Length: 211
Length: 223
Image 1 (cartoon, helix red, strand yellow):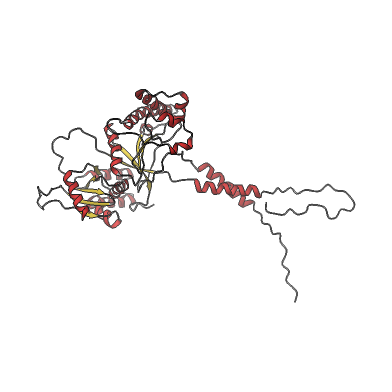
Image 2 (image 1 turned 180 degrees about the vertical axis):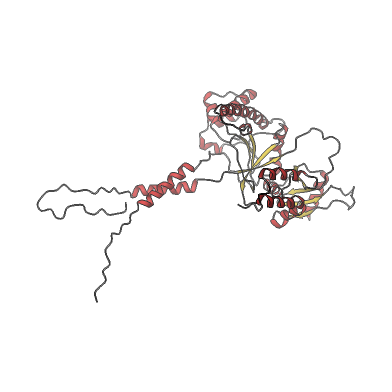
């Protein structure tokens, strides 16, 4: 070690020839240096957090959808472009076939907590409020964990729960898509459907983007 | 006034505990560190709150920033089987050594024609191999064939692994041995490119997909 070995013997030999007592200590400095080098290397190179996965079930591919698309009850549609996100609620009404409240207008939002997360939490309050109640029950040991997960799944599938359609244009990035799905999952939404964009919707999105 | 004598102490400190600790840490990090196999692309994935860890037996499709497509299958036995099937389909011969090498490789992204020369390259020069990724257009959908053959092969090897686990007296979950389908897309890749890959999966009726993400803070259950 970093230590100067004390002189073992010598000094007071009264004429007698003594074998020099050599120190039993070995200089360990190089070994310790190496140990720390290795330590630094492993600390810096090792990655402990394994990547996580987010599962998403896609609708099965059917060659020809039977009849018209089913009426969307309590749904929200997100239109994604590069780092931009627009949405409308309910059915889509193009300009030439306006609904009760006129043609569909897109509203812009953003990926921040006050934008998308708040919007989804407000719209899906039906599920979130009931979930809160159940969480309290679980904490008070009035409900089993398994019952909770089962009931939450049931709750997500109810007609009052929000359903989300995701449509992307040619410029949207994977990051935008995953961020959106992530927010949707935070809001405990069970039905997520990534679907292709209608031509009318694309037109509307493009005029909105030009503004 | 008498001077206060400071006792002369040896300038050396006993460093044994420190060195012990250092070696303990070295051992810990050496054993705990898992080295990632070298991959031809580095992908920056987006983050999500999901806490599901990536499973063991996977079929992974990687999409890089330019939209090039790469393929990976984790099980070496299944890799051999899939390669043999692909080789007979595209009528490309591989020798034993190449098949063995391929089974130990990680992600690759080249056409079947390029594959033999890609396998022959030494490890580090594979990174610079010029390729356009695995083709997946409707005329030459190699990705689709890779996925379907790999799925069959991985199902087979999974089945034998399941039987083995059963014979050992464990109660294995058959789902753990089925291959999972993973998409690892760079956050900056255009989603339409990823959608093409997703469509290939969906054409094969594989609708349960997983996206690789890095983890982030979950506001709903902070723990």
